Amino acid sequence: MPVTAYDVAVTQQVSPAAGAPVDRAALAVDVVRRMAHVTAALRHRQGSAFAELGLTPAAARALRELDPDHPLPARDLAGQLGCDRSNVTVLVDKLEQAGLVERRTDPTDRRQKTLLVTGEGRVVRARVIEVMSDSRLLSGLTDEELSTLRDLVWKVSDGGCPESCGPE
Image (cartoon, rainbow, N blue to C red; front, top):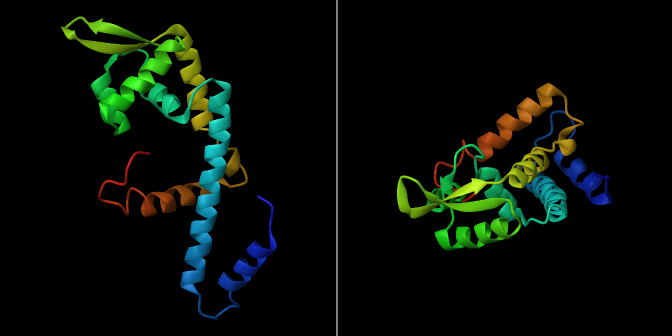
């Protein structure tokens, strides 16, 4: 990420001389701005990669949630995604049209359909997982820094958010 004049000004605001008090509000503003930048960069990179695969980010996430070795009812996928079953129907329609998923009758309950990842779906799903775990933005961190970052992000997300914070 290139350093801008704004970055220098904010850094000077939040990096006081030794012994000087920290401006917590300015520091928080800078942290939130930088977190938003990282989030936007991740979404852009992932969105571009998913588009190359012919998927929307929502369809990619749905495909990732499906276990190729264990067919899943659509209602369970909706629960995993934290969305309405009607939304899952639209996502599964797109995945099925792309040949990545098949709807099959559940052998234990013929009224229910399960979702089966196709051979092509397995290949695309593996690529989706690669895209979602791409850590190039973090490559400049040492293992210790990455561990510290993970702990801090956990603290401000899962660990500091006992109520439902919405889908991942």
